[in-house]
Length: 131
Image 1 (cartoon, rainbow, N blue to C red):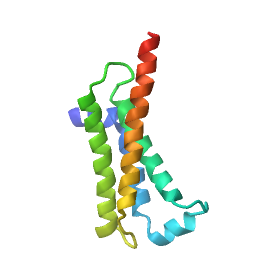
Image 2: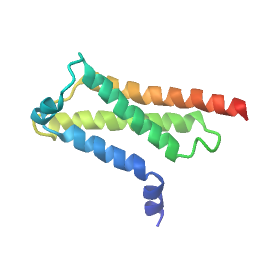
Image 3: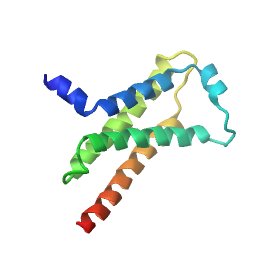
Image 4: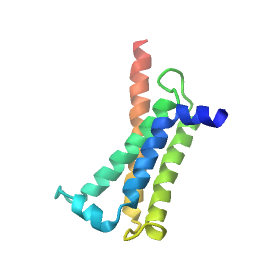
C-alpha cells in the first residue's frame, strides 16, 4: 500500500516524467518536423522550461507550500530533477533511435531545475513574510 500512496502523492511528477521520457524518445526526424519556431537555441529554452516544471511539480507535491522546508530536501529534489535530465540525455545517445546526447541540453535541463528551486525559495519567503 505504501508504494501506491507514494504514487498518488507524486502522481503529477510521475506523469510529467513520463511525458519527458516520451518527448525525449521522439526520433530526430519527428523533432525537426515539430520545430516551427525559428529562434536560435529555442530548444534550450524548452529544455529549461520542461525541467523547471518537473522540479516545481515535485516541490509542490512534497507539500512545501504548506509547511517549512529544509534545504537538504530541496537539494534532493534538485538532484532528482538534474539526474533525470542526465538520464534522458544518456538514453538519447544509447537507447532512442536517431537521437544523440548534448551537453548543452544537460546544462539547460539543470538550469531549469535550479531556477525552479530559486523561484520557490523567493516565493516562499514572500509568503512567510505576509503571515
